[in-house]
Length: 509
Image (cartoon, rainbow, N blue to C red; front, side):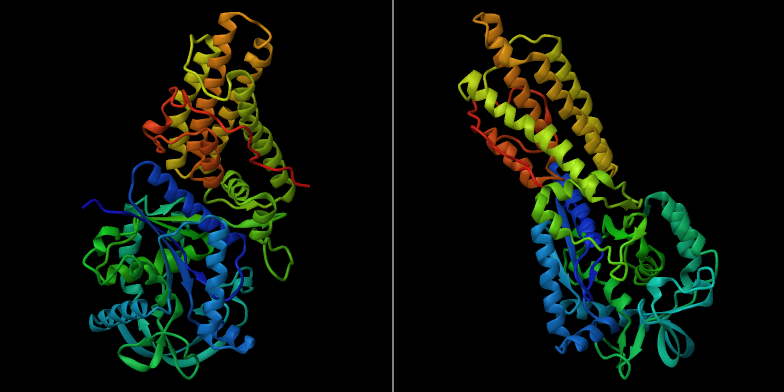
């Protein structure tokens, strides 16, 4: 059996409402999933919720409700986010699921039996916000990073995983597998982190300090560290105990934010897997942050963007388009409402929406509402054919390199070229002539425009699934919807009756 292509996102922490970072990560992974499926791949897409840990327990206590009820509420919020953003996952995992708990306990027991987990006394600095022990060297310019929150000194007995035992192995692995971390400069950051000796990882919390977690299988007085619990979710989602585990695993793409690359996903995770003799994920695809005026979004700064507000006002597909068009995967990007409005008005409403609207209007006015066969081609028609024959491979190549911004830039350059073709041929001028040649040219022009719009819609499917389907519907197209034969330039729409009108992007104040 051919292995499925397995795509996961970081699971969200059940400690707050969804924000634009969550939205972008889900949309990016969803677009990747749709992109690969259009190329004939069988894809398993998983996301989920990380539900244990001190902050979750504190949030539930503050709300005056049990932890699980709090997590249920947060899970509903994140599932609704996915639904409203047309993020179509195959598996939504929650770390409170009995199956996941069983997987975590099995992994812990295997590591303990292999001698990779030991018990020891420890005194050190602990970040309450990051929920991990930290070192003085973690300070930046003499201060703790803001995402560390309050840092306190703790002395207690805990269980530790022998992380540093595998440090040299990890360095060699990262250096010899350039595809492991995308983009490449993130790998350099990981190697820089690994230049200094790393400490063993504390993987437990005593129940007297925290009871909301998965109990250690070898000591009922402790629960496991939330990051160990969370990182194991990816193998749980691939059906760890099932005979078909290898159908998905190893994961092909972990889509994660840059803030959890080091140390969690690029250090803890591969070492834990290696110690368990489980294959390492093929690629950690790391994305940047959405900023406002160059600053990271935060509740205290009051600059957090609610993704659903924009999706509700401008439409889900327009929101998806903006995020994927503006951000270069791996880099930070500024979220600008003014820039959003420009993209909506210029790219979507004027270039694409107006093109579809004009096509439907002209087809009914000059061709009786049905697309005709191609007639003889002149240079403008040959230019349109060459445009798509050249551009389609380039656009798909950019998609495959996760350069969504570049793919969309090329695609909308083609859309603008089609608009120029409309002006060049000007069917409304040709319609004033009774000549047979001009009559054939009108039919050919409308057929060419229809074919260009059809190809553009299929290429847009990963980014704007709802709008793309609507375009294909108004074209009456029921043929191949893939990136093989489906994007070949031909008169696939000959004989189709087009819808009379369609407003894809309503004017928004």
